[in-house]
Image (cartoon, rainbow, N blue to C red; front, side, top):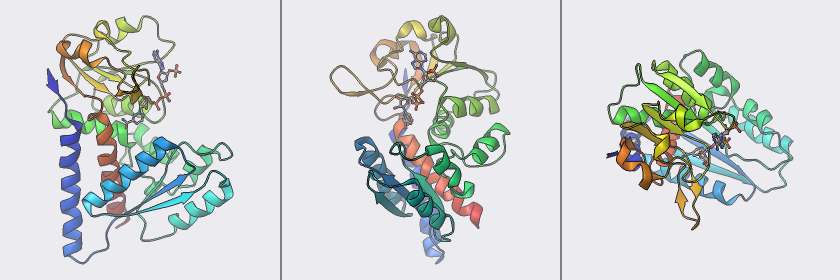
Length: 281
Ligand code: NDP
């Protein structure tokens, strides 16, 4: 069994970006800048935002966090986004989700300039993904493709089963796998006989948010398993959707949790920020 080390792979992506930033600095050019907007006091969001800021610092990119409390109105947030959209020094805008309930998340996502939408959630970027055109791709799905690249795994002609159909993970990763000529099955909570469906897959992408759900009867012998889940087990310890200990000897390769898909998401966010910077010229 091969362990797909997200920490190492993400570090090599961040090191490439760092080198690009250093070259820009040496040439006296403007540096890429990511602005993260954090509304409210969601604990998990605080951690994610801190990690994103650390990622920027590592690469030498500029970063700023704009914080607002739980009472922030939609109008206030739209004004912040409008200002960032028009700020020539800002390349990437990320509004950390979830937002307080008085704010319509979709309206906020749609207000972000698609060329600065480094989360890749704007309908225009989703359309580009659908049409197989160059755009800003959601970070977690793009991170999974980068992991497959890092282990030299070609999806062409392979059976991929994605379990989970969310807009931020399941659907976009399915489109990316399809674009790489995989035969893609998308399973979800209404899928009948899930083990029968998943155990056909050469690559299983687990994105359901249920701790240690996938045991060995769900896995094909020699499969590649990408575990997106960030769950808590019975001891409140971070774990994935896959029961790692149960399946590891049956897999060809598997991502651990923590240290798998998670770190890739930040690396791809930084990569998207660099891409947005380059697209803006
Ligand atoms: P959502 O809750 O939005 O979607 C979960 C999906 O899983 C739904 O499509 C649901 O089906 C399906 N599902 C739930 N239970 C089952 C089941 N028992 N059998 C089959 N399908 C099921 O989750 P997200 O996509 O946002 O996140 C999924 C996981 O990935 C979470 O653990 C989350 O924390 C993690 N995550 C990790 C990231 C990272 O950077 N590593 C980034 C984003 C998410 P239905 O549509 O029918 O309800």
